[in-house]
Length: 544
Image 1: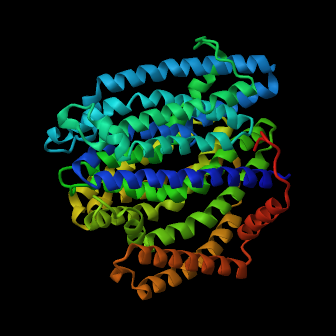
Image 2: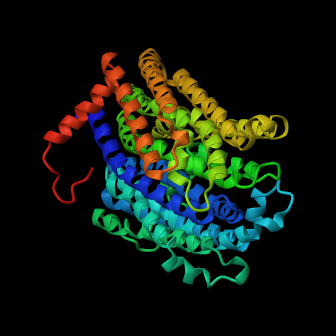
Image 3: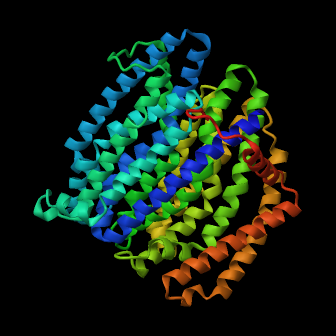
């Protein structure tokens, strides 16, 4: 199988599991919205969830793997297998001790953690519940970080399905704790001032993180991992991972760190109540798209690129990158158009239930508009950073990420104090979007200057065709929205039917125009599907 088909097959397998995970994630968020809406309790819960969720997404979406996989790949290729596993054991226990200390500090200094978010808040007593919830949730950092390392080990053996499936079970545990039969007795364990469903949701998140790690342990043992305790910060492999980890953790996760900054500004006293929750829900909707194929492609790319660099095949690595950008752009650009035009119906159908009212929908749709403008940039950043990491360069993405973070911070300040009446609660999302485009363009130009052409003409030609297809889709989508009468519809099932019809109709237009223009990306995806239909079922336990 060619490298292209290997990547597409792996990415498609990951994407399939990720779709299920994102659906479960939507159900999780829908339960939170139904129970808490955009109330002060919802804002407190989102604040308490931010740092553990930030670490979960930073590690789970590649930063830990970006530092570990290239080093482990070198060990597997050049050294005896037992030596490779000895390095892995030391890395595991070193990370466990580090995460244990971080988790303990997060619990002890919970008030200070929440104060970081509320620097622009006039009355911090409003956030006492957030302090309490943070003490419950923060220990999840320990299990989330180790689960990410376990996933990186399995990815090195091209085992993608199991690590991709673990968030499903985290979400299922969380959803279980959102039902009255569980949350009512659980929240009674809290002091009277804090008896809210948010307490049970926090406990559910912590237990889900434990499950996420536990699911991967048997697969690690099967591959040869043994968990004999042993610490060694002097091990050469551990030191190399440590050298790469800090910059990788920062560079791969600039979007998540920018969201952390956005949360601080959305908690400002100038923002309308519920801004923190609305920003969170808008990002979760965008992640339904971003997390499906962009992250799946990024996960499949890093081991492939690491092997290509190790074998001195830089031209093949650059070709792999260009191919991946075309495929992801073929999905991300029309998805951004759809989210922009259908943002209000999408938020209304997915979340406007229970405590999540029409005002909550308006707040969230505004934030979603500005996030959606940046969807293509958020997606391709997931592809260009693995290209640097496969060459053991984690510092350049970190430096550009620092400039991107500074730009996001400056824009947030400008929007909050000078243009607030124009952008309202959407200003943090707009700042992140502009920073994301700066991040990608800078990384692209620097890599091109260092290593030569990246096939820019081919990328521009492909994206031009994709843009034409997206414009045709936008026209059909806008027309359908105006003619459908969605705004006047009051029945939920009618709204679901109208939204589904608009999505499927617009998508059909997009693929139809892509076929007329002979977009290569469409034929490559269809070719993979035809091969999948003809291929025999994999044997039990087969790796992807």
